[in-house]
Every structure is written in structure tokens, then in C-alpha cells.
Image (cartoon, rainbow, N blue to C red):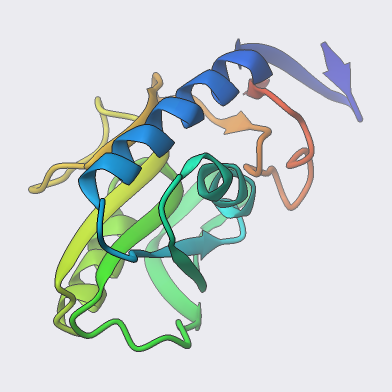
Length: 175
């Protein structure tokens, strides 16, 4: 498929995405039964996933956002910059950090360390996409939507220079 001069190949359909998110919602609802977790979305990419995930969760939950930057175009800068912090106090709260994608693991490690310093009751990570062959992590990702190869992808909130977030599926961007 070609869109706005970009050649795209579908990797994950909108239907598969919705089915997987429904399952993740059930898993999170079961794990936090009797609790009110706070989902903290990492802007900008996670907002679509976070919205659908919240609708799939059957227990009460809250949400907040944090914004970081570590990419320029299709390349990681190797540095994480905090652009917007959370407004909620997460001390003694069950926190679910919601990411759109985990590539190298640099951003999620930065955020996980930052949140653990605030002494939450628990800290879980939910990532829509995970690139396991390049993610350099020393901890488990609790909830994973899909594992994908180390390719640059767009759609479902993920962008290429702020474009192509609106696509309902996940697409490999052909360079």
C-alpha cells in the first residue's frame, strides 16, 4: 500500500489488534481485581493503545500521561528527554506503565527507574509492541500485545515524523 508517498506493508490487522487488546484487558482486570490501578501512558504513541486498553479493562482504573522523547525520524537518539511528567502521586499505587513500543529498551528502563523511585505499591509494564531481538532489558514486560521483528513500524498511534498515527493496523515502513 502507498500512502502520502510512503510504501507500507501490513504486519498486524486492526481485527487482530482489537482481539489482543480484549485479552490484555481481561488479564489486567484479573491481576488487579479489587484494586484501582493507574495507567500511565507514554505520549505521544501510546494514546490509542491506552484508550482501547482502558475500554477493555472491566475494573475501575485511573489514567495519567508522561511524555518523553528519544527518537528523531526513524532513529533513536540514544538519550531520553522528559518533556511532561505525571501529575498524579503514584506512591503506594498500583501503576501500569503503558508504552506503544519497546525497541532497545532505553526509554522503558528510564521510566521504570523513575517510577520505582516514587515507591508505588506495584509497577507493571504494558507494551503494545515489543522487539525482543533488540530489547536490552533486565526485567520482564508484564503485558505484551505483539512481538515484532526489528523493523520500523507505523500506525495505531505510532508515527513517522508525527504522521501515519491514524492507521488502524500496524505497518512496516519501507525505506
